[in-house]
Amino acid sequence: MALRGSTYTDKTYGTSALLVLRDGWAHRKLNKNPVEGFSAGLIDDNDLYRWEVLIIGPPDTLYEGGVFKAHLTFPKDYPLRPPKMKFITEIWHPNVDKNGDVCISILHEPGEDKYGYEKPEERWLPIHTVETIMISVISMLADPNGDSPANVDAAKEWREDRNGEFKRKVARCVRKSQETAFE
Image (cartoon, rainbow, N blue to C red):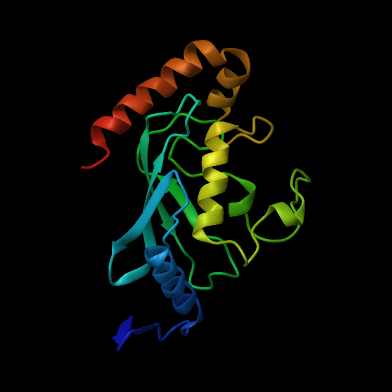
């Protein structure tokens, strides 16, 4: 990737994805009314494809008080395809697999769901932004989707023992996130 003036170029894929990301990043930095509950920034100022986000656990949820770090990795053909999102901070949640990968409709490839769980309009659309993704993730923390879990063990505990073992595991993750948030 080369930097020309204020425009990034990528010789392999052209500038469209980079322009969308650059303009979105500039908009986010200049936005006077940021979305409550998260902050976002580039991992490396020379790589617009990799972002780091800090998500504050939503109030009145088991995740309240947590400060969860995650990475968004954008594909070269963004916004036609969705980014991937991975929690770096350990989190116990039905819709986050044990490796930290987030599994929600908005981050699934566009088109028909071969399993029939999701409508096409629930999946990725090129109009989505970092803000809409983060609003969906914050909503996911507040209201897990137990019907389509990425972490079957967490989903089972959430359904069967929400105020017992599930709550204890989430509380441990919240404490750990507070200790490591700014490392």
